[in-house]
Length: 137
Image: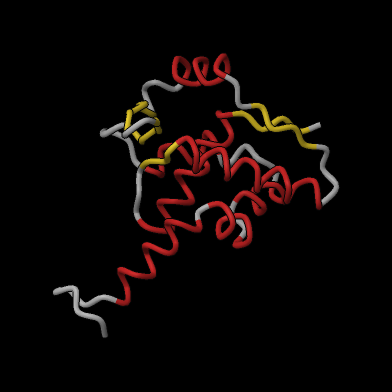
């Protein structure tokens, strides 16, 4: 049985969002969607997967990795961002390299990324279509 927790989801979501748009943060709703898509994809590959995102695990994550990630509030929600003195390369050995290769590929799969971060992808596409002075090409 694979248990996906905030410890698996938040860091890997930040890695993927950084690859997508250079972001160093993820909102909790985006992280939850990423976790749901990961669980769905893992199950389709025959892995028994349980998504566990409860307040106790979130609190534990914040204590254990508070040197790497900072919680922030935005509107009526919250998210996590990579600490100012950290880079993506600092978290990959901790959260990505320890995952077996097949599962790591699912974490980074195009389908999971597209389904998880549709809104960000749409915003990124719009930015590419607009010229610097905001005129359409």
